[in-house]
Length: 329
Image (cartoon, rainbow, N blue to C red):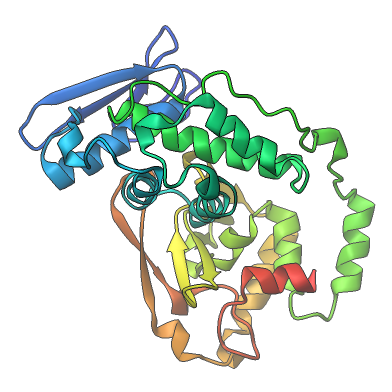
């Protein structure tokens, strides 16, 4: 796998040139080679993934033709559904959920029924203006990103001639780093002391020791623990989808989220203690599932064996949901 100028992996089919541009290469079903350069790595990845999806579906490779999708009067609603299901389907589940929530709650009512080609900057600005009184800056930013990413994909695929958000800016302030409060070492110790005896103590303590996201901790499996090297590898996530009432496995949030973490003594001892208690856990039929997800680095299917999870709720025999950790915290 190619690396960028700083030595970090770019992803399969992508490299960084000496001039700083990222180059993506793709060979379609007909054996024709395509390549394209972008200034930013995410743009390269989006183009490459879209080219692969379109090649699988229509055999047209990266040379996208309008008839692969729909007619000239395709609505924004229709494009969004195609885009969210087929083009950005490998995004982290939380990211896709955020895109859909922002579309349904803020974007759809203004432009959903409009033909995609008719959307102008004034329509995009209207969406943000209507949000001003009721939404925080962070939600503005999420809506702005969702719209921008969706329309950028439409431009890249030849569905519209130019980006309808050109010149559109949001000015509502978002939370700045100085507003974010981090726990000091003393505060962490006080928190862990208060959490002792709770059913989530080991999970909280491991997160503090390793910096795991909640979904990464919930999806942690024993095969990701190297006892000899004393490391923990992050390569998947797990979350419960309330609407579908099912567990979903997925890749880490970004390619750089794949990582191997050296275990501190406390983290190592926590995992030893959890492993020693496995035989006393209740076992739910939910654990019989093997979930399939797409590895973000390779594009290949990977699996999460539920019965191999590190953390199980001792009362239910199932993994604890993200919302349960939030509420208990």
